[in-house]
Image (tube, rainbow over all chains, first blue to last red; front, side, top):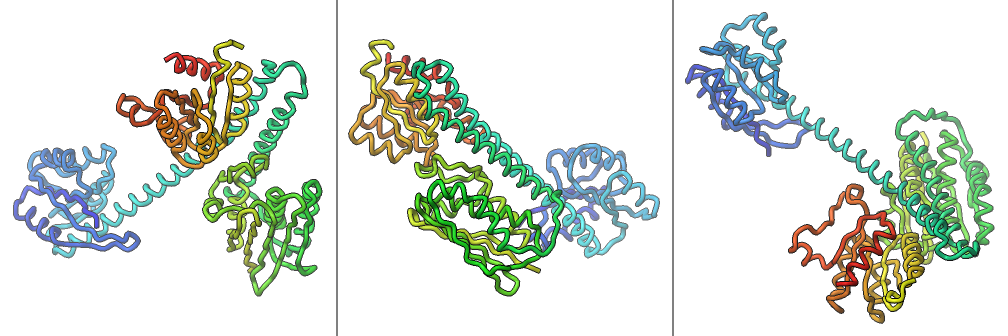
Length: 373
Length: 133
């Protein structure tokens, strides 16, 4: 439940009390905002008092009489709209004419109520104001949240990009100071760690560019019939060298032709991500099984590895940006922590999803569902 | 290599393997004995058989406050062992850990805080100060 603060400004006591009574026990429900709204009402007799109450009470809605003794309603309106507040003002007057209405609206009034009015008319106009106010607040809140998410993403990104630079800088410093003497072989481990970190950073930048392109919607999609099996074969060829290094066998279980209308570049990103991950996180002499099936309008790509696997908690946390499972098993594995975010974004474009099932030291299966239209 | 450092046992715990490697190499070159662990868990294991003369602990490892937990362990063994806690830049992590008042310092069982990235000279200076106490 939320309470809207209403300030009633009128020089006639009867009018003030009447308006207060009409609103005091009234409750409104606004669709889109799942909240019941009640009113907290304060009153002012003059324009000067109204301005004081605006400052102290900070109303959400002001019902402002047009004709007030010293300071007119329009003058009050001008003063309050000059301030940067989100208060909504409704002008109330007995001298209802189109001109007065127009001039009030021009000066920043939200709406206009002509005297005499029925309690229902008053409630309706206040309800309209409340709806507009609360929706505007909600929009503002969402924008603020979006800004926060963006800020957080950039902070984390900055941190993630600085980490490899710090690492390489540290190793170079040790080299520069010849801390381990002049024999170059003694620095082999440091050089290879530096290379691992730099490659990781390059991968992160490449993934980041992919992700940005996908999110911005600026990447031009060319949708055409593509053979998913064919793309899987290409991706397996790309990973062949890395697989051979660890003597990992790559198997494909799929019909020769599994067609769908898609952007071939996007399906390539999915396949490359899944298959290169399955190789990277595998053990020596392991295997990778790529299974593609089609059922009605759904294509399922499942990539199973015999690798290091992960715990339930690790699997649950895996899909957040920059998340990488950090342990002695993953230390020398390159990764940006963005690959799965990309997969999720792309499968979302095909009304699909990515899921994982895994067992530590046994292996993981990543499954991507894609829906064809 | 100064002679008086020869018998000083340092424990470094950090899940950033590169930072761990580098600090170990630098400290050993400066004459310290170094034992290192890559996780809070590994450090707890190590502490069963090893008592350091001084410890440098990363704050956030597998647990958010792993460094504090380890500091507590070490201080329970011997409250005189100096403990330095290292943490990432607070503005980046969004978490501020900086003991300002004496009360906070007594609660967080650490003798010094360093913000990463840590220059080796800075670390060694801090260690020297704490070891003199």
